[in-house]
Each structure stands twice: as C-alpha cells, then as structure tokens.
Amino acid sequence: MTKAVRVRFAPSPTGPLHIGGLRTALFNYLFAKKNNGTFILRIEDTDQNRFVPGAEQYIVEALEWCGITIDEGPNKNGEFSPYKQSERKHIYSRYAEQLVKEGKAYYAFDTADALDEHRKNHEAQGKTFIYNWHNRAKGKLVNSLILEKEVVEAKINSGEDYVIRFKSPENQKLHLQDIIRGDIEIDTNILDDKVLFKSDGMPTYHLANIVDDHLMEITHVIRGEEWLPSLALHYQLYDAFGWTPPQFAHLSLILKPTGKGKLSKRDGDKMGFPVFPLEWKDPQTGEVSSGYRESGFFPEAVVNFLALLGWNPGTEQEIFSMDELIASFDLERVHKSGARFDPDKTKWFNHHYMQTQNNEILAEQFKQSQAELSTVDNAYITMVVGLIKERANFTSDFWELSHYFFQAPSNYDDSAVKKAVKDDTKSLLTEVMSIIKNVESDTAEAYQSEVKNWITQQNISFGKVMMPLRISLVGALQGPDVFQIIFMIGKHETSKRIQAFIETI
Image 1 (cartoon, rainbow, N blue to C red):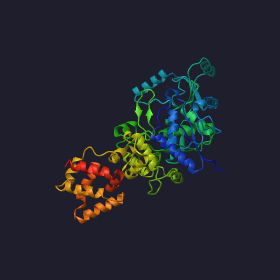
Image 2: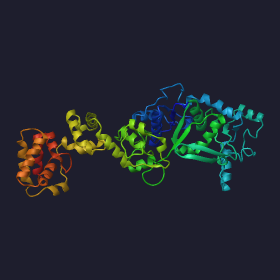
Image 3: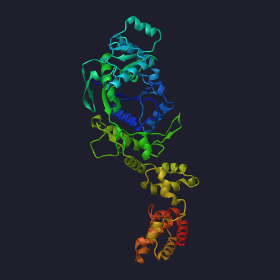
Image 4: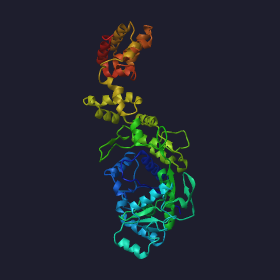
C-alpha cells in the first residue's frame, strides 16, 4: 500500500526568509496538495548560537501571506509534535548512542585548536584535511576508535568535551536517487566523518533532520540544491538505522539577474528590488530590508512568479491561480539548472494581478497612503482607480497617475506645450470651453459627442484640439480618456483649468 504523501519545510530561524526558501516551501506545498498529502512546517533551531529573535514568527507570517497553509507545525500540532527541534532535543541522544554501540559512529575528543593545527599542517603540504577513514585510527586524532573503553568512559564522566562522529565507510560506491537530478554516484573515500551530536546535548542538523523525517513519516524531501552535498550522509544514516529513506528532490538555485551566482540581498539592494517576502528589521543592527508585501506586490503575483522559477508547466500558460498550480505541478518538470531572476517580470505579474483586484479595496489602500485624499469621497476615489489602474504596477503608482483628478495642474510639461500649442490654440480652447459649459447631459459620452462633432464641423485636426485640452486638464500629454476626466472633475473645474492654461499661453 502506498504511503500518504507527507512533506516538510524545515527552515532555521536565523533571519528573514529568502524568496529561495519561500519557493522551497511553495514547491513542497504544491506537491503535497497535488497528492492529497500533508504539508508540515518544522523549525530547525538546533544551532542556538545563530537563533535570531522574531525570525520564526516572520517565517510563519510569510507563509500565511502567500496562502501557503500549514497542516502541521508549531501552534498547529498534529500527532508528531512538537515541531521545533529545540523542544525535541531529548529524542536525539539515544539515536546517536545507538550508532556508537553498533560501531557506526564514535566519540571524538579532539579540541578545536588541535583540529585547526591539523588543517594548517595539511595546507602547508598542499593537502586538504578530512577527518575520515584515512586518519581517524592512526593515533594523531583522539577518538574512541583508538582509545581503551575505560579511557573513553573516564573522559566522558569527567565532563571532557566530545562529539559523536559518523563512521563513513571506506572504498564504497554509493548509488543515490534524486527525482530531479536522476542517478548520483558518490565515492565514500572522499566523505568526511560528519559530527552528529555535540557535547552540549544538541544534535547537528544531519542527525536531527534524519531522525525527525523518519519519526514524522516524511515521504518526500524537497529542498534546496545547497543540501545536495549532504545527500550521501543522509542516505548512509538511513541505512545505518535500517530505515527506508524518503524520496529526495533538490531544487536548483535562483540566480541573480546578471552575472553568475545565486540571488542575494546585495543584488536586490543594488538593483532596487526585494529578496524577502516581508520587510525585515534586524533586531541587532536595526537595518531594514525591503519586502515584497511592503513594496506593493500582491501575494498571488509573488506565488505565481516563484512557481515559474525553475518549474515549467509544459504549456505557454504563465498566469496561474494557486488551485491551477496545484493541479499542474509535477516534480518531473522542475529544472536541474538554475533559474535566473527577472525583476521586470515580477512587475509584469503584479500588473496582471492589479487588474483583478477589487477597486474599492484598492481605493481604500490608496486613500490610506495619500494624505491629500483624507477628505475625498471613497466612491470618487474608487472611480479614479478604475480609470488608471491599467497603467499601474503598484498602488504606489496611483498618485502620479491620477493627481490631476484631485488637484489642478500647477505647471505644464514644457515639451508637451511646445508640441501642442499653436497660434490658434487660445481661440480653439475658448470655444471648447464654451461648448463644454453648454452640454446638457453630464456624461463622458455627451461631452465627447459635442466636442468631436464641433471639431468635425470646423474641419480641424483632432490633435490640434485634443492635445492642448489634455494639457490644460492634466498638465501633460498623459492620462485616460479626456472626456472621462472632464466628467470626473466636472464642468466648473474643467472650465477653470482651461482658462488657467489659456492665460499661460
């Protein structure tokens, strides 16, 4: 019988969640939901020295903002709780001791200074120091493989610092499987004996990760490419415990927009885009890093562009709802190669989702962000938003695109004036102003009909009238339909603006 799919996103609370980590969470979530499985959040905080206050809550809030719903995790406990490794530390020591008793791991008492000396000696000879089969039992290192049992016990009982290292095998070829990368062969002679457990009572990532994945019945481990070098050790640990390993899938890196290497905060700072889902304030330095939410991105846009970074649906479709992503997602279509990040494409996605947003909600956001609108009627702002949002990528664009709906122009674009104003512009605008004052039906269509009929009757080019008319209302050659503007600001305000522009000519 096939086991029910269970996946986990297991970040460390060491700072803000990078969008690469958010993409890992998204792919885990999509895979789980596609297969009617369970999505688990597990906080891997075994390294207390790197713990950053607020980071765990940031991770949870980022997932919630993106609509990535947790089935099991901190504050949403299932039968495998707790879901924070610092609350599970009593579990790990017996597994580490089990490996020692079975001869698959050993105690090592080497000090940090001694290991550093070994590294320097090797470097001086043009070599790389690796703690493994070729030196662990030759007398230069201090471990339970060469010490008498009584000596080992005495060292431990006296409180001497030690670690438990995995005993990697010699002269073996490991044949590993990865859903994305296929068959992988590893020579065990190049592997080091990784530390599994520290004398402070905390496991390393490797042991805790394997034990937790087994106890939580994880069926698929979908994680970033940076964990690929650990795959051999993790397979060996499963084998050492006699456990069936999950299926592994290692996601490619998100690459910087230009040049080589993975996307970093420095790239975002340099090019002016966020690399974190939410704004983050460093509790130690006070430095603030921008977030997609605070930069005006819609969560649907962030989810959409992240999903297409490294995954190809096999069609030309680019716009996906979360439900559509779930239905289409397949790990077999995830790329091996890195996915280049395109800041302009993220804006394109946000522009699309801007058009689908409720105008009343956008108007409320606009009003809250712009002091000049505090006394303006919400219904009027909503109508304005409906006219200008197709030109916007973000709500922060609204004021620049619509200020003339709320304030008369205080100046006029010089290049536009030079292009539009002719010798007869004054007289033409004076006539247009009179026509507008006398339009009986207060609709954009009525203003358009009367003005355009007059232009046709006078045998005048439309540009000769419409360009200066637009400048008088807007201050530049931009904005939506002129007659919509006239309808919105009203006859009286329209006449005032035309007269003010005439007086500048």
